[in-house]
Length: 137
Image 1 (tube, helix red, strand yellow):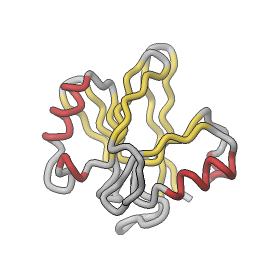
Image 2 (cartoon, rainbow, N blue to C red):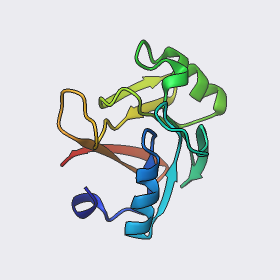
Image 3 (cartoon, rainbow, N blue to C red):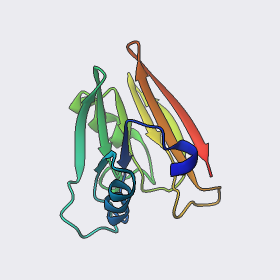
Image 4 (cartoon, one colour):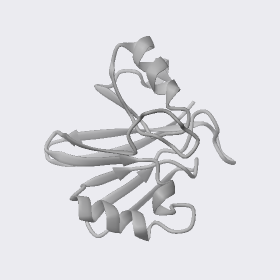
């Protein structure tokens, strides 16, 4: 994945095995943000609210918002936080949806995909817009 998609400004790891984020940071020298998943017991934060390119990005794992059952709680939470996009994991399945004006995006999983190829997401913020591209390895 790093060879194929490594030309990025930063990397966001959405939880489960947050130690992987530390390894990616050491390997690439890039800025790597990470959040704690339900399988993590480290001191990582539960969520991050980042401001990048004039857009607000909420990054979290999603287990606390019940994303395996519905995306409604996630959408409400992201809107309450003022996010333009919420990036989440937990299901290990790629999902792109919308709530109000919030983009909800789960890139899937590289390490433990569920019923699909290992996947990741590339989020591009430019010219006041957000563009998402999913990738597989």
